[in-house]
Length: 194
Image (cartoon, rainbow, N blue to C red; front, side, top):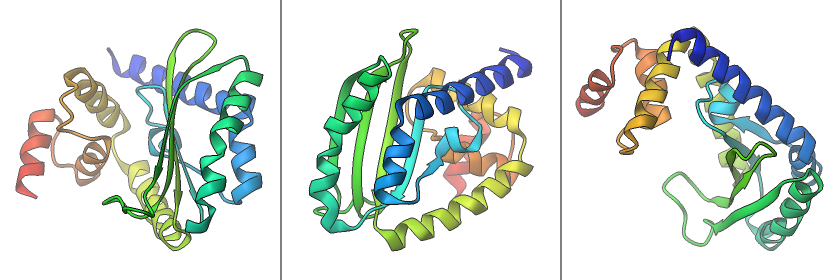
């Protein structure tokens, strides 16, 4: 895959993600209920190599029963857009906090009209934690804007092809921002030294 191919695919996936969030009304529904919704991760950074959307929003711990009820609303939004919910996973990490922090989670999987598999992770973080995350995310976006975009896309494609899970997108972002090399092997060595 050439640099132009990677850039074109990232643009295509970014447009598909925006269209899906708009067509399903999922983003607008979450925004009406919880206020702020942040598209983050590869869809938020315009660094997509697969059909994966991450949404972060502030949600109080006592809203967990309402959050649990979102499954029906999500399924209805997808169905109204001609899509079918394939899988939905719920977590209440206020009960047993995740290492990433306390919050609520819906992981949904569905196929679009062309048959492409999509994954959408919806994280409802503790409001204070959300604000801290949003500040970190803003800083990361600034750093990524100065990093080598094609290097990031290439390494993400290579890491995805390996599928061994040793290298995350965040690892790649940090590696590219640091200007620490340009191969997965260099990235793994860089990670080991940190």
